[in-house]
Length: 95
Image (cartoon, rainbow, N blue to C red; front, side):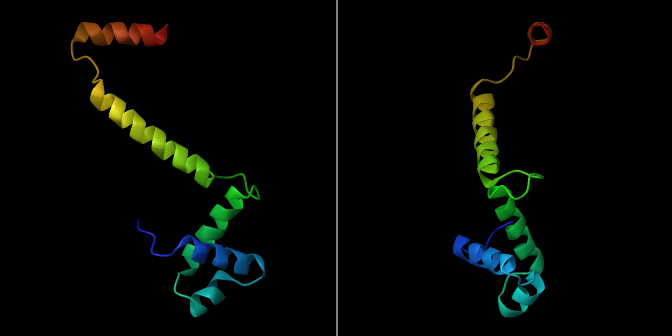
């Protein structure tokens, strides 16, 4: 889902919520939906260590990078297609 708001806008909304404003109030004054603002606050709380029930932005970026890297490696080194090779690889993986 594309994000049409700059990071500065996210930070401003987070600061306003932390100062006591509700996402509903901010929605009436600014464009983002209340749910978007709640999502930004939750992510900021994770990144700042205020919450532990999710992944930080850095962790999400690392996971995305590793998945991309794995995809490239799988494309460059496809698994063997012979049944014997598959059996050997499964034995090695178990051992």
